[in-house]
Length: 166
Image (cartoon, rainbow, N blue to C red):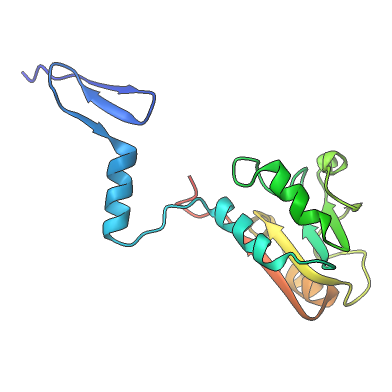
């Protein structure tokens, strides 16, 4: 019978008792990912980087399904989010979640659904929907409404969970 017993410990390390063998799973995972050119950056961090590229001074921005914050603070520091938003002409948030009232960075809060946006045509330069599209029951109507409120040359950005979003 094998005398080794497996035991998981904090710090992402697996130790095998009665042996001198230990493996740091984070280092191992990172090494394997590097060898196959796989980026392990969390999708929310990547989304934050994209926002920093596209959110510019004077932008009129609509965040559909905004909840109570742009990104989790582990993905982008609160101060960085505040700085990013400070230059926009407008940040409107749309959500059916009542916690929209707690979103500290919005200049306008609207309780509504994507697909029935209460805005005039060509109002926004940027429309984002972070982890929302997978909840939309009528995607054609949702996307048509996003297109309707975008200005010519405007940008839209959608993120969704993936099997690697852990």
